[in-house]
Image 1 (cartoon, rainbow over the protein chains, first blue to last red):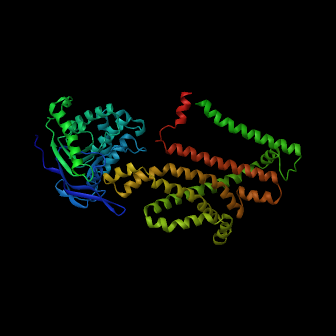
Image 2: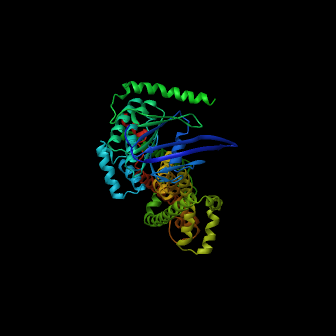
Image 3: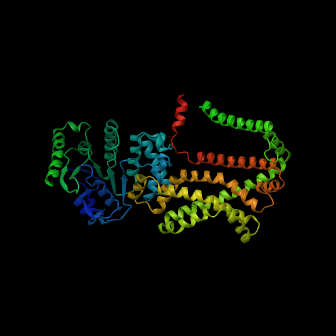
Length: 261
Length: 261
């Protein structure tokens, strides 16, 4: 395994429950995980396993009941404005041009206005979207919108990128295409990424390590170190280890499920 | 597409011509007294006779209405933004807002005359009270209805409250604002006329009172034609303005249907 830098994001003993009427519904149960500098880490779990809640805690939109979150070595539980974020829906502002969508997010992250605009245009050209830079987002296809959304997250001056099931709403072909695209772009611009998905293949394709979460209340079932080298081969899915892991993870999830019934 | 646009103009125009024709025929057949119901031709002649006067008074009313809309727009937006930002004010001010619309302007007008004299001031206040309400109300609805995904995105990247207002809530409320502005534009001219009715030395309202008192019914109808025309002009101006400002909307399905036919 490659040697990575220090821990960029570290979650220690995070628990969270919601009040539903008089009931307390636990969502996250003692979750500890970390992402090292330049590492691509995936959280995988069944839908409704509290992955999005975990992201909201990291983003500082909500506070955990217990445990703490550190970014760049500093405890920042409940602090906002430290991560960049790519949601499931592209969440582009319909009244801003594609370039302005990117540059305004960069301004929020502390880049100067002029520099943000230049950077947005330069990178849009680099990913072959220069021709639509001044268009409104609605003329873009779903896949193109997600590319813009990813670029926006990539360019923000933040230590950690959080990607919340970014390809879940795309069709299978576009999805495969996007995974390849993201992999290439990320491998040439190593950032610390926490990626959420419920597709095992996607997780194995993209990440260095995978955390497997149980259904709610989520606990960590297992940590998998993905054994494939970087840059990843396009046909990595034919690797026997890939097939083996792909079979193992659902079993793990099932077991995690039955053990708590 | 041109065909369709032409039809949308021609059909209402034909209706109008038929309506005027029936009116003219009725007056001629039943030999109506012109001081009870003048026929369209007599009204047209009367308008031509008074054209210089009507033009002068119409301009004066238009000026008053425009000032009312402008100030009402400003007050409406400010009220909406304040109420939206400070939750306690929403509860505190709401009854006052409704109250401001419950007092009939026929009652409010004379009171304002007593307090502020016969100048421009009381008329403007009256107009602002009429004009701001639809704007404030519709904008308030728009501010609260900004897309939850975009709201969540801004929260996750740590945008400040001000940024959220500037980048999300205000632009999202613009199409609502224009619905309100359309209502305001429709009411502004009639309200200006009422204000002039209550006490003025110029404007269509003043002309109306004068002719009414002299049983010059065809001149009264001439004034009505001017008022309706002014209202339509203002409404049309708002529609054009909306198209200029809100350019990010996808083309409506109507346009597509028109293109394929």
